[in-house]
Image 1 (cartoon, rainbow, N blue to C red):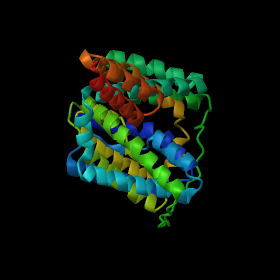
Image 2: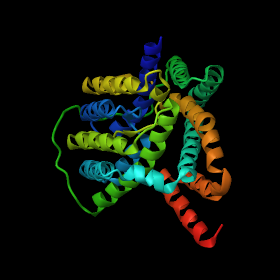
Image 3: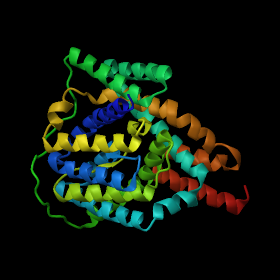
Image 4: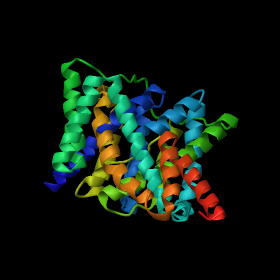
Length: 351
């Protein structure tokens, strides 16, 4: 039964990633080359015995897709940003950052991300009320009855997707990705440098917040430097051949009985799906709003309460509160910077 739950968790995260994978294709990123990223990610999780897998992440896909004027710029941003992140990970700087910022800021970032996830879930449901709110309702009830994220995402995604099929709805995200492995020529200009730096800033916050949240779900420590290394190598392999970014995520595999195995299984299955060119065919049955229930539960019920309580406890309440608020309305990196500024000013002013 435990391995069945491992498989369910892996399949659930795949279902979670399909709409975001289609988003990547809509920006012109190729499907088959992106499979290389999942192969590297699976190998990295096995090598480091890490519970934090990587998958499609809407924030990074959108950032690269909108900041790059063409595919050469987008792929170059991903590659050079990943190279910088890999360097940070190799030198162990992310773990030092976690130690330096302290628990109030770290918890504030996590709580802020939880608020972000809740807002995304509500926004999704508003766009497609029948599918979205049914997913939220089913997800909430499932979690309240089982306290299990694996069952929550499986049941909410499957039932809401069935509703979409009955209503003859299809995925609202287009797909036009190429399906060949072809070495790409990278470029370096001011726009690429700016985009690469933006990718680094986003992924510093995402690796710390998302990696730590998945670790907390699994009740295992996550070394975010290791996570930065294999997620960055995955991006470099993918972008060299025209594939999209694959980053740290908040993964339901963390709640599986064997989280490392479940995460590796998820990435291996996703690689097979992408190598076979099945993403556009499978994704048309999974509307993006079907993951609203999982995002809502993960944000509002699982992530926000415990981390907000930690962030707002004791003398670090102001620092944690600012970090949480800024993260919620911008991104984890800016939230971290805001928290550090308040922490510095507080030490200078003596409050």
